[in-house]
Image (cartoon, rainbow, N blue to C red):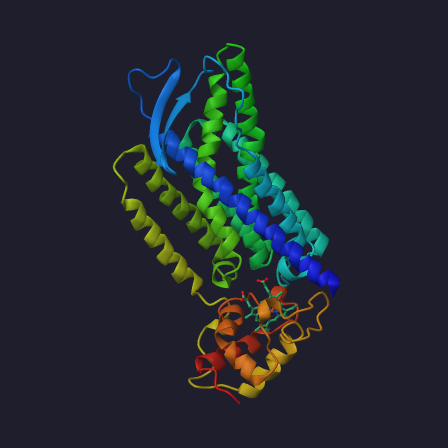
Length: 400
Ligand code: HEC
């Protein structure tokens, strides 16, 4: 029991750190994109200054000036922005290990797909993260990388193919997490392997009074731009894996692909606006249409079980109780008997008829409309049983 309590708190503490670090990272990344886009030139700026911006915050005015060459005198203190990104990734990886890799049987594997052993699922996931980054990095460095629009389109196709692949290999929840982890890894690797090393070289050259290689600046800016456009999708993947309609449906891979476009156009709206150009309102039309498509796709029945009920009004409460007791209650009990589960998950207890009826809506979402529960179908609920639950719900979840 002590172990379970410590485990749970370690999970919560890491998640807390992860979310806070992510907020700090995204916050200052949005801030700097905005600052960069709002810089203006004017006569009389100090020598070497490329532009300035005025801002008001916290009871004072800030006059921000951007230098593209070393200022006449290097400041004693130069702040680098990198630990927000590194902390987000490190805490995220720790969470990935704690929640997913150590419980791969519940969260990553799904029977009916590839018959992976837990360690194999972990190996595939790690290899996928490494390979995803390598391919992305090569694409950026290839001749294609000279054309931002073409690169974005190829990148979208690449991530969509990967998403489709993930949903063939992992359970829905594992697949959504894998894609979130991959996009996050690409973003942090951009900072760690490209942007920061490039910046170090630029600073070194400037201090030495030399002209820095413009390619370094171009590359860094391109990767920053990618990170900017990937921010909203990565956050969707991280929270979407708590919503079965997003991760456990038949079209989840396509939903994620739509989110990649949707997140990018929303960022585009703000980027244009911050530049001071006409706001591209059409982006909200695209975002709304994308959202409508997502809702529609998620409503596609995950199995036949989600379709028509057996017959109008047909329901068999006794059979429902039997199914829930035999497929769910080993975990969802006041005192679960499933190994490794010490408390009813998410406080959901399914032991008495009243408890089962109270959870009818959740059962509909997690078992009938999607296949989120039982996790990885560890208790082997059958299609016929899902159909019986569907019929009971369609009939208004009558009691017994
Ligand atoms: C092997 C153990 C296990 C079995 C069997 C199981 N569940 Fe779960 N269930 C879990 C875990 C673990 C979670 C928490 C998932 C999470 O962390 O989001 C959960 C969460 C849930 C939730 C709450 C989801 C939320 O996000 O609020 C519902 C509802 C649920 N299960 C219903 C069922 C039903 C119905 C069945 C049987 C058809 C079932 N579960 C079978 C382990 C199990």
